[in-house]
Length: 463
Image 1 (spheres, rainbow, N blue to C red):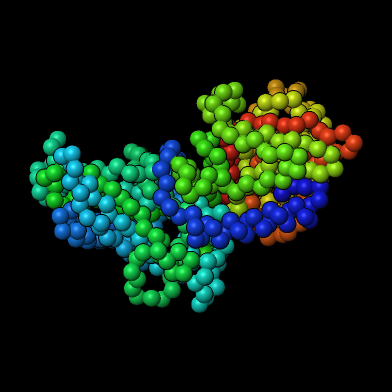
Image 2: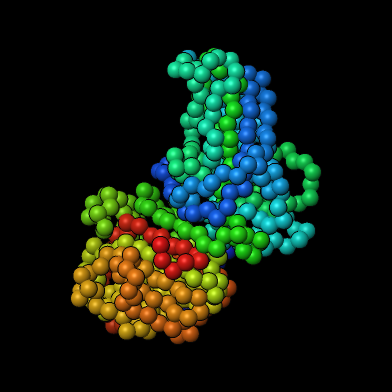
């Protein structure tokens, strides 16, 4: 991160990250509903579970389907569905008939059968089953790989149908057609050796998630249905993972740090508020958004003297020194910002170095932890005042700055060895927001910025 009093302020961020890890394991696992998510490419697909359900008796049979299905476009997580990797624990809550339709809720607990955790890159300690710090887990998606069909009770047709009604959204996981999904911000601990579980809520103690509720609406004549479900989650090194890259995106339909009870379906971010001179203004705005977007995130901060100001969103993720990575954003100030002192920050940190840019009115370039420019940079007013930027890290060789973010020609670069080390090493994460170093004797102008998209990726330097 960035700060003039780096030890104190970065220590605060470290504390926030540590706390976020515990919360991700234990508290923030409720299913959510809201806007659609576009998951990022899948490297392998490991099968599905076929489910036969009797809506009258509540009997449910789950059969692992090991067949290979060609991965669809637009997915970025390994899919779990093999009987050797996860196990489903289903139970029904009872049938309700109302308004000429049947409503049946089937709950699915998910047990991790592998020796590595799902949803985090942290290697578990053998013999311990307490919550490990996952930084900010991407979470786990359960999706409908085979749409539900009627198998008994009536002949399928206009008056004999079944569908799901409570999905969080739809996305292309394994087919070109959109598939319904349910999402939890949860980590599944590694297998604990037990042969059976009750399948309720074991988060942090055993490798079972609390339940995913799937609500089915069926015609009154339907008695039996069949469908297929699978799971999507990061399976990363060093836990035997096969993914070499993955992408996280933020589109402002709600605040990035939305809580478990909110309507946000994308993996959430953490928020670092160190504004000593006022309360940051954070809200979703529907006018004047950069890039022609219909919604954007507004961040407003009050700058002062001596003390720096930070209102920064961040996510911890697995980024090693030798790995490539990037973060890009579409952003613009909606107020006049200082010409030479950065007001906007965008960057990433691996386990050893911080690659971050500062954006001022007439200079954009790499900065150190005190907000001082350490690269030649460029004047945005002579480059068309770009509203999108990308910071890319090329392993341990270079960090480069691109504007617009889609460009393949860098406008600024700095050797990896010239980047500053973080105050606390070994905590990789990605971040964006407002920043002011706190000048003396005159404070920089207050800043209000508008963000219409933020994307970061591990394992690649460009989209």
